[in-house]
Image (cartoon, rainbow, N blue to C red; front, side):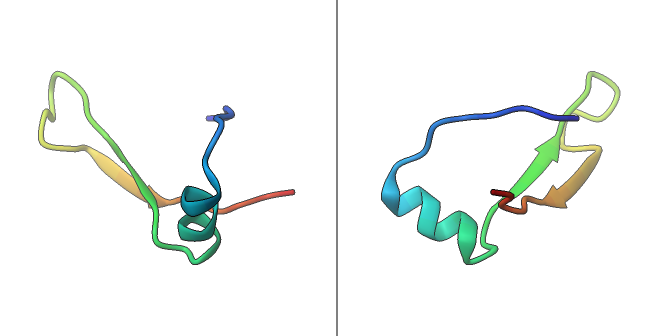
Length: 42
């Protein structure tokens, strides 16, 4: 999975500190099927 998004300076600091993750939801698993920590690449 790939993608991009615009973030504020405050959100950028949170991302760089490793405090953000993605939780994938599906119809079969509405509470969350898989999650992964987001990493910043430049």
